[in-house]
Length: 283
Image (tube, rainbow, N blue to C red):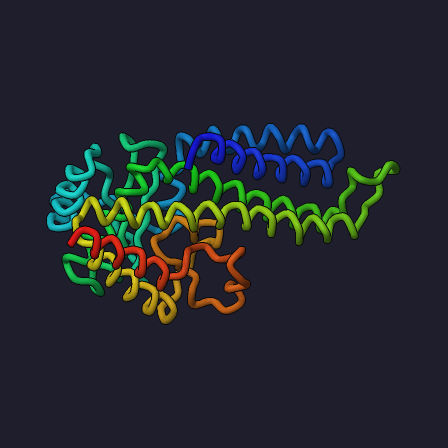
């Protein structure tokens, strides 16, 4: 994604934060919310990886603790021309993976225990290559910041609902209708922006990941296994963090599939079809 689109996305999310601040506290609330958004963006620049690892309950591992995984990541990151990322494992039964960090020099690749137990070695390489592609494409910070801003908007919207949009009333009274609108519209708009960027970045990461590992069909096979299993095994993670994973970690929860606008990931069948086309071209 080019810099203009990145700017538009973050500007839109920041504008929602400011608008909710205005609903809660008028012009003073808007200024305070803008300051909050600025602080959050700076905080995410420096602390995004720790926040995401904490959200998934993941722990950093050393080469001594996970030699096979560490060596696999090391070999693939050399194929990608990247510095060695931090390697982490999440003690989650659901098979999944994600990348995070503010830049390639401070990146993290994390896989779940369920992933390592489910897929073959070649498929695991495909998944790790996909996550390294996110790092190579510099997607991680953008998606982490978008996830954090989206989560903050949801929290502010709930606050606006309970306090009834005081800033919109000249006499300082509450306005429950404004609070209700803010609670529904603002989080929905934030999710649409966040999920739209996530879907497009997944397609790009699939393509680059296939080039890194040299096995598009291995990645395709892993995606199919992950999608089927994620529907059976739930994961306890914030919806705002769902777009960071390689497949939707909340696929088992009913009510989240409200159409393409609210889909965190592209359809797996479409991702697989594109990978098969890449494999045919390589052949």
